[in-house]
Amino acid sequence: MELFNLIQLAFKAIMRNKLRAFLTMLGIIIGVAAVILIGAAGEGAKYTVKATLATMGTNLIMITPVSNDPGGTRIQSADLQTLTMKDVNLIEENTLYVQAVSPSSQSAGQVIHGALNWPTTIEGVNEQFLSIRNLSLRDGVMFSEKEVRTYAKVCLLGQTVVNHLFPKDVNPVGKIIRFGKLPLRVIGVLNMKGQSAFGQDQDDIILSPYTTVQKRVVASIYFGGIYASAKSEALSDAATKEIVDLLRTSHRLRKEESNDFEVLTQVEMLKTLNTISSLLTLLLMGIAGISLLIGGVGIMNIMYVTVTERTREIGLRMSIGARGKDILSQFLIEAIMISVSGGVAGILLGQVCSLIIETMLGWPAAGLTYPILISFSFCTLIGIFFGYYPALKASRLDPIEALRYE
Image (cartoon, rainbow, N blue to C red; front, side, top):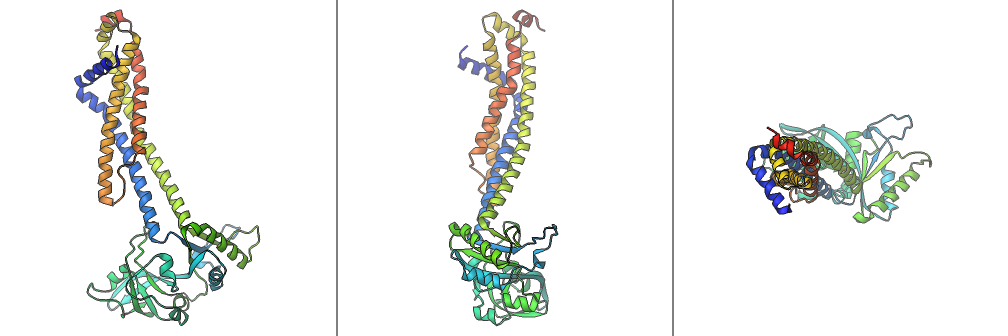
């Protein structure tokens, strides 16, 4: 029989039992839609993370203290005493690929203005910090190198702190606030940054000269971290190597000793987050793929029922000259049509849901090609795989026995 005639016969058989065919397709529809939706959401999450990290500065380098105790004792980075002003000066004066450096000293506490207060974090930095972190001022000015040297009691406020300490119509610049018992004069307000890639509110911060924070808040000469920026994103690896070599020499670490500091770049952070996101996406797509397998089992089941119901029809076709391969092709095409139709409906449903996610969350989730191709190919293979055995059974029926079947 010609292919076109076989397709016509399969289509008519499906249309005779529309509801049963739809229920059979449902597992395929849900599975394909889930695979497309999860794949699109995963790619959207990667894009969002990349965009968020880019707001921190694509050439950002972060140095944090770590424990190199061979006994495996884990210590909080704030309690480690490995990074000092000597390290900051070494990086600033002896590197070719580093553009700017700022120490960082942090402390959590309560900030107070009048009758209002708010739990937040104060971070001690230098005058280069804004350019390193790609921050900008909405109002006021950044503290100067002179104010850093003289332990000036000045600060910049993030927008979250401003919102909790001042009414909307009040300009914080020039006002005096207290962090714990330390009075600070507000000289600037930062533009909003939003949440970081790790869900941290980047606007819930007070910036002050690191000398002020070290002397008047944490009472320590050690830093909780050092921020640096490479001269360009392409030079981040070269700058990182320079920093590692300098600090190992400065800290007098032997060749066999591990570093007592950690150097992270935005590129490394992005790779790590993308790896985690990809693994989670694949895991969820695998779980969604189970729906496709269940849909395939449903196709096999309904095809067995169809073969049983149409045993006399099969016998009649064989008696007037239909060959076994014609019967096989007819039922196999029917199974494939059910699977592919479900796949197409699932693709449309998945794309609609992706557009909804894109609209609601702002993720570029729709229009991705590879989840569509994977889903469509998989549901076609499912139609062939799960439809073949019932079709083979139909093609092997004895025409005489089939005609006698009641």
